[in-house]
Length: 318
Image (cartoon, rainbow, N blue to C red; front, top):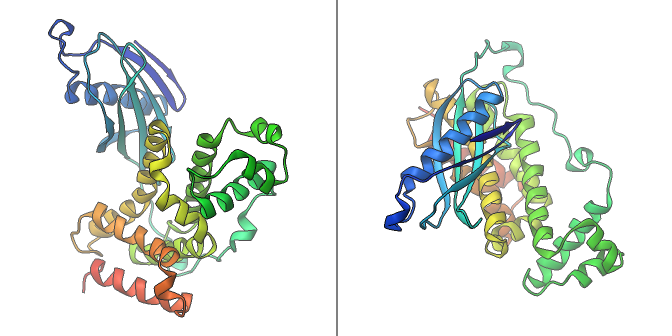
């Protein structure tokens, strides 16, 4: 039984493993169920898609009489459809979280030669921010407190004081510290995704990679403390929140993967493993933010030039 709504599918099924044997539900059964949910969601969205990648984010197989699942459409790069599927047993305990990525079959028109070599205007981060809201102030204060004390030692009272709010007012905006940490993660990832989406279109794959690296470095330079939290506190997220953030992060890295695949298909790049290369590219911005003890005297533009040259040397055919 499936209930299909735009960008969300809920369903249930009987597992393939016989309950009488008390055998854990098999991974194959979980993946099959996840594929049914995600395929139904893709069809409901009008996507003409083919399977591209499957990742098991978490897995706790156990016996079950019935499985329920929820597939939610994630933010994804152009040309991809990404679904995060959470599967529970009949006691509503999580058994698996699976991320399925589909490639969308779309026609790509010819590139405008006049715009191929043009750099898009660089938008300062301050200009792309929306007007500050109470939640923006809360996230800024939470970032400051968590960066100084660590998530385990930070308290909602300290965060409320840093925001200039009373504690009850803070709880009117967020349920608690766990939700607040997830919001910090989601906010920072969305900021980077927005920057990458601005520059990851048009031009050659080489030029798009250069633009994406520059955009990511801009964010890392501006948001060093936030980048530190994202790299340090993933373990502090609750399991279900961690699964959601890993799915978001996987989709973010997928933006680099998509451009790399374009470059390989066009004969512009070596036949390289896109996932490995994409993760290296993503790390370059983190290195700038997290290793200032090495680069404190290195100008930002000099670091960018060296990093781009290093990356393209491994990607571009001679």
